[in-house]
Length: 251
Image: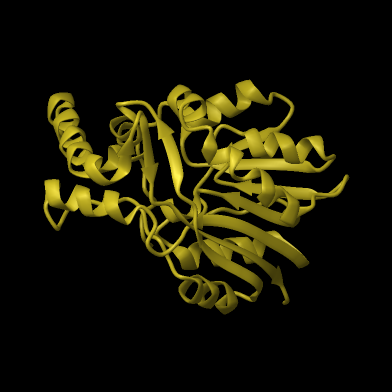
């Protein structure tokens, strides 16, 4: 089985400087359309903001994430919501749920088949899977910059599938993809150090094993490469692309 990506997280930076991660997920909640009394799994719940919003709609929510630092923040933020530590590609629930929801998490999980299998097993017949993740071409400039600085064998912790790639996996596990979108979402990050901070929050796995000084130098070099095309007047613009889908368990 492909091992999940693990890295250390700074919950404060994640919530405060990169709150767009869960703020952009707000309209995904409209697709979920949680109903009072439903049982819903938030897969890759992070610091819990969207799980909290689902609970506010009257659903019973379970938040699952692999990062203990983010889960600690989620439990502090939303003490009435249940949060569990677990791998999105290798989990089981004690009872099936009405829906599985996921925002900005599944591109961290290399085992797509494991995700499809676990989600299908977790859902009731007719249950829905509503998710958004990085799609094909997401942050291509940053990936290219990391490979330029670290070499072509650099450890890139994310994968960004196309609609066809991900739909094929889900349908293999009995999840019928009813709607899917792949779209650009240029994302603004404020501050002169915005790119270095983004890398320090989201790309720590690429510098695992390096000294703090070496890791800082790597992120500075990537930032310098990207600055001419992605920085204007105190704002960085990241070339985000998102894959969003609605799927239903048919068997």
